[in-house]
Length: 450
Image 1 (cartoon, rainbow, N blue to C red):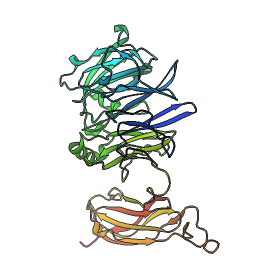
Image 2 (tube, rainbow, N blue to C red):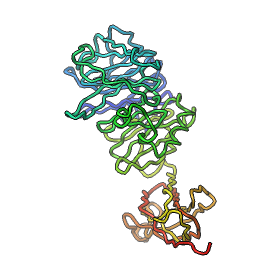
Image 3 (cartoon, helix red, strand yellow):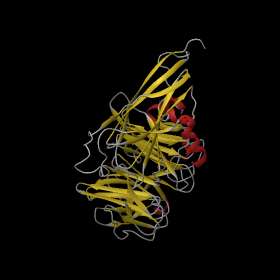
């Protein structure tokens, strides 16, 4: 965790990675500061009017650069030691609102425009050429993002350039040079859900995911069908939560997609108020299962040197590190899907059940049961189950028995419920131990005489 002055919201985290030189910068209060260490250095850039920067890393013959823009200030770039303002001609530099890298070329969107700009290959400054797209879009709006999408069209991988409008249209081009009609051609224009924010596009493997009002949409499934539907959204299972947040907070800053391979999950950062309260819609990269994280109120996120960071009010925090929430209790609340146990439409008597948990040391756990799609917190009574062995930093040294590295908690509980299906709920609150919910066993029989 690092803090810096002024203590305002950290709205951009900007990682630089070139060989052994790895830096993390944060933008807040009109400053850009180096927050690579716990004690940030004096601001590297000052006098800025907007903290909502978009960025890419690009390598050229002149070195490796972090290139940033925000649509209000002149763009900046960093070369591993120095920040500078690139010399750009042909456009008003302060109107460059977003940046992407496609085929070794920087491409830009502009404020309130349906044209995009681009530089020569492997350059970070110079003459910016523009390419109008307004005649392609029936719904108007402005370009908000650009993405590079790798698609296998049957003859091998093909890198396509995608241009997203604020009103939910996307133009897809193939080729490498917008200035050469023989090397730049329109694939098609498609309708999708309206994108949310400027950080609405993020890459997962070769695919692009679009954060939209219709959910989190993979282009590989949306564009061939020429339209979005809830069935093609990777967020289909949480569509209600996504659409509710989109309706209420589409215009609130903070929407962003992140892939965190070290943790084995990806997520979308989602505002749930207009005053800095956020949640994360988290998907397991191996199973596709969804969860929700709360308590990490990050306006901006970044993966730096493999680790996950987020920017809050006046601070930059490292996430997924340690066994406490900045010294406070980490609370978990899990609920399974409702299960029929192979007998749909038949009532059952659920007699006993046991959650199979593993943890280091004593584990306070609350275990509950819901039947027939109910959500009844009254049945969610707290209880405490102790794993065998000592609790770190609590038990007396050289007296208490050592705990197993991961002790199992698997006591049977009385359920005493009737219903067609059942879901299990587990809550824990820990500050010094990891917890894994490995499964749940249940004893039941078909109900007769009812």
